[in-house]
Image 1 (cartoon, rainbow, N blue to C red):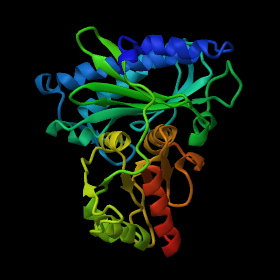
Image 2 (cartoon, rainbow, N blue to C red):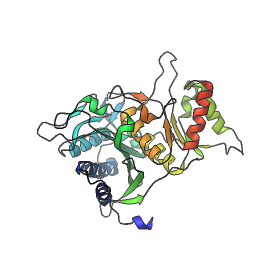
Image 3 (cartoon, one colour):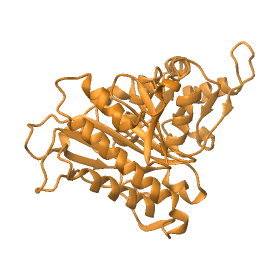
Length: 341
């Protein structure tokens, strides 16, 4: 840890760029802008209770969820930080129905950005940790032309960068470029992100599980039996596990990354003819899964790694299981045995 003191996120970006002589600097500039947006959103979150920006905005988003005022503010901050930077060809937000085009007056770059501007925002009035999740792909359509939806509809395995920013007792930015995971904590006294968690690794097994137990009766048999396994006392197996569930996905997965265990949001079979998933593939599941897998963990939708799921639409939803390697392996055994997810 001492060797990382004083390393700013900007220096880290530049050091990483120098490892790739062919790099144009666009990705570095993109990450700079995301770090800047994180500082702006931190300011808004910190002052929310004093600025009359808590509470609902008065309308629904494309997901059918009530939009919070800070959702809109965070969405606007990220858009205005990125639209003119010349590094993106298009964007997509959990809060917007359609692809977000780059204004014609600005240069179109070679990357895409999909983001959840404020994950967990329904808990903001209760002062619960919230965060921003981001996913970056390299475009597949010709450079120099306006971005298209197909540039965004790529599997998580093709992400060039994925990460998240947690706004809590401190602001922390965690990201990966496919070569390990690093975490940076915002020092408010100097306004800089400093490397605080170099080369993050998730423990191979933990002792916590995170899931909304209120939905237990609507899960598949395999998932129910796996949770029964986690909660049944057995000294040899190290159970029971302790339940830790905040209800803010970014906070739950961040804790899982640090301490190990498993985070689950299974398929909901309340209506067996129309089972439903909640978490968005592009904005939540794929980027968080890339971070965890790069830290040595695993992810699955019950059949395959989340990173191998091909999105068909901007707002596809998937079941998500992500965490330590041994927990996900155990879960897969239960799912395979009972042949359902």
